[in-house]
Image 1: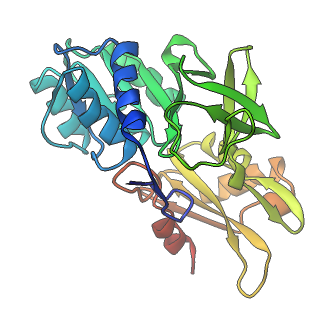
Image 2: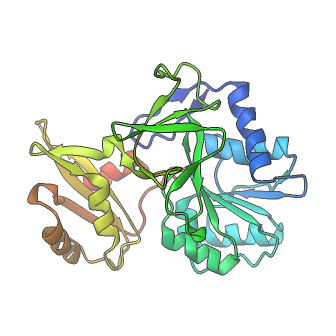
Length: 313
């Protein structure tokens, strides 16, 4: 039984079978050519599904070496990769952002992975430029296992399902059929499970993620796409990252948009002016706060509870 990261604010426990866990481990080893010659450095803890698969199961079945310790600061990560001659780096978007402009200095590195959130294209390109290795994004969840991958440094703008996974889109929602699905998940007549993410088919063999199904909120009776608001804000100068939430109004059923921006050089008034030109009044944030760093959980996902505390007077 494995806990989810709790991105949506509530932790769930999903059962996983031996076939789920080791089936995915053997698939990863074959698909990425991992062997006993590889040395894996992971910046994610092994008690979440991503860390468990890549820093415990994968090195066990490959069999590869896994480097002791879980570095989290940029100098620690670069040092671990360089000194231990890592060939695979398993990390998260926040750590790749911290590594921007920093070279690991290890010619041994041949693959880098990212999961637990969307990776910024700028961070991917910067890492590839500095280290000669692109980052493979792995899209999936605790209950589904791995679903798809992409490498933006190779010009891949959308996700392509891994060969063993079937997918379809129904009512804007990505649905998957896979041997990695947790037992007991509710599936349709064809064995597909509906995920919590919105998607749009691209190129005949892939899909673009559009955000969480719960990332669409009602404000004043109007539909607001929180990912769209976030995309506008991230284009502003000085904004390194941001989180957009719909917080309930006190004593009522309505919502208000709240934004937490990472980047002390960002200008709150400039952001508000931009949103005033691009968004309808009901979609503009009522609360906007700039911080040095957005709180994260150990698995690299946003710490929703801590973020809400920062945004709530």
